Length: 483
Image 1 (tube, rainbow, N blue to C red):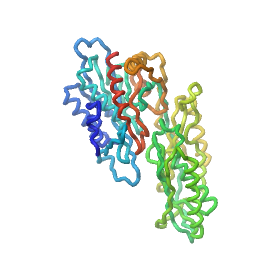
Image 2 (cartoon, rainbow, N blue to C red):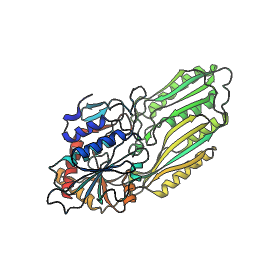
Image 3 (tube, rainbow, N blue to C red):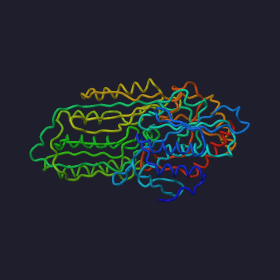
């Protein structure tokens, strides 16, 4: 592991290094919460925790600055746990192994946690930097953002005082975000009472789709990357139609907000069709690689012999599942009419898995338009309902509506212009930020979101640009000073 603590700004990178040593996947917050509480008390800062597990650390106003309104700096403590299948790493116990690769910091075949660890570290650096002369600073650290924004949903209006908020969870340095998409989870469930017997003369194989890039289902959805679940079931559709394949089990994707990188299934087929299937999978691999040239690296389709399963899915259910997964919408649905370069509405076919007596497909839909979100929900419900699935929605969260007259946006824009002699881009992000939820929980707030340049969050390719961190830090300090 290369030591990132020598990078500039040193205080920020030291705090980020500390965070990489603390396992903090969503749902496992105790260790990082204890670290944050200890940090606040160690530095003599007012520190408290709410019922949802969120932590607030307040720094008093500098002498003569008591008249300034309180400013809230906000980031989330959890990270997305993703790794390549061949890597041995337990996100609940193992630290992240960081490495410096030229201009970037990344991890060794796992997510890095710069989303949102860099934002957390920046707030900690502000809270302990005595050269920053300003009013009250409130560091708001939310929990379990990545799995459902549960910390933000649990906020109460009196937990903090400030009504101007800087969210530090964006991933494009030089851009100020003033709005984001809302989202909703859609789950389709197929039930069955028993498996069919494996037909006589069949052999069993495992088919793997591996090596896709995946990524964040919000910020990377426009890149046109392949979805491992879609790829697997397109292969299966052909194999079932032409080679008598029966599907025994399958699993693809692990997180609702990550584009699936890997998927696999166990299937059976007549022994006489083995050579034909092997050949067709090899041909399909070349065709997919050619179709995604320049988008994906050399992903692979592999077949290997496995033990015979206890049974296979009922034939009618097998067909219904395959047809619905192949047909359901995945990817960009519509861009914003007034901003054609910005995604408005999308869906991510995140998880497809067979379990005892059950097949489950989970999708995360995002949209900055409530109307279009409901249209896509209806379309996806229909795709699965036609196949006999029970379809449910959950976890809906609001978008954050842009305010192009935002005073804090104007201050942050001026700060950037003074520092770098150019105007930052004002944008709306397709990812789900906590801003809309916080605004709904506590009432009217003036807020923006910004951060350093982070590429491929929610995937093992995640990396943060070193120079952009320094620029982001300088911009953050200047914005605070001008408030």
